Length: 231
Image 1 (cartoon, helix red, strand yellow):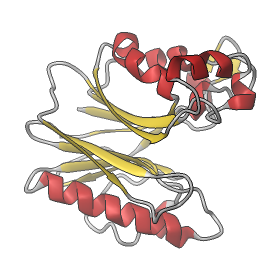
Image 2 (tube, one colour; image 1 turned 90 degrees about the horizontal axis):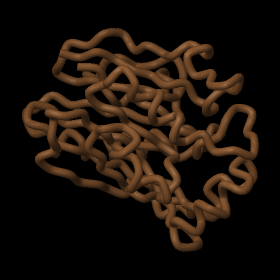
Image 3 (cartoon, rainbow, N blue to C red; image 1 turned 60 degrees about the horizontal axis):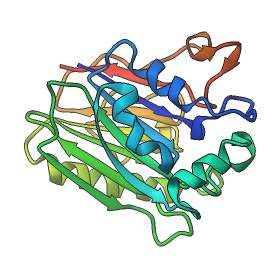
Image 4 (cartoon, rainbow, N blue to C red; image 1 turned 45 degrees about the horizontal axis):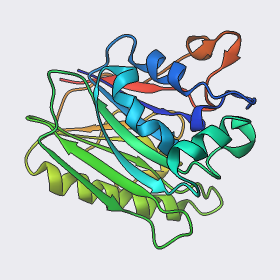
């Protein structure tokens, strides 16, 4: 089973330009038919389109509400996607699962300590696996902030999993050396994006090379997708 995670940077390129490339990003990330795809920084206007773009079943958690109705906010944002980013259109996290996999339970939990920008971990329970997705607070001067959020996410995923194996993926905004509390979870990445696995054999975490996310001469997102094969 291939599990992939990608922070979509609101559909922006790196460096950011006027145009949104969100549809191209989702189609690129699903072209080789991963079993599970965890996404962060998804504009709210795009959520109803994820299943059509990917051919997968989508579950999402909104982390910042749009300031305007979602589709209007999206239209305004796309006038200059690199400038507006999530200011008008909000953002969300999403978990996509490929058929024939089907979520049998879905839950979400706010994991921040009442910060201005909410942080959420959400999870789907499949027949034999729980997959949780998070985007922790970016506060590199104080790594304890993200570490506390990740610890709450880990407890949340563990509770939902019961005795099942689990995956905890996303943009942790922490490097592996700060993830001391996550004993028993393997496949940590070299950067701040991880796909952690517990109670299942997994490959080492792989990071996409830059050239794999170049589209029409531009680099998609300021994050590279990361992935593991499990089972």
